[in-house]
Length: 209
Image (cartoon, rainbow, N blue to C red; front, top):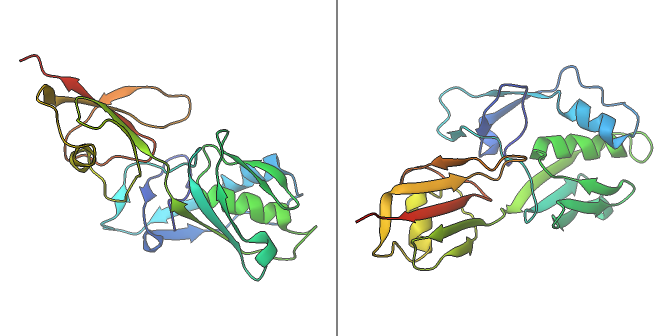
């Protein structure tokens, strides 16, 4: 399963084995109101398994370009593959237009489950996985700048290789990234061995020499 949500202080993992869900305190029988259900979803806490090798220091949140698979157990008509459009929204049976922007996978699972529960299904079991992550982008002093498909385990060095390698004018010490985070365009320096995330914008600056 892709990264899930936790409480106010949390970290993200990249595989299902890295998560232990604490479902206590969640009102699964709330009214079928999307905004209210989203608040319920955000109450879920997640405890990391100690010494997990897959722990990453960021939360993966959905955005435009992500391709997700929604599976509702024993409900074929409610199970589907969805490509988040330019507004990161999609149309879903009974619930209408859902805005998935900046939600974690777990938040979206709970939002859909609570929306279906009671009025349409007694106890919906919703599982969502990411089929294809949104592209990352690399520009500046690489031979083939542009957008590339994200792969798990991708580092800056591997991303540069995908983009044809450094140009002769590239500076290996002046590499910057803008993470695809809501309401943030902060640019940070990054190293060749650092991991990148879906939606990242990487810029390779020109060397002074």
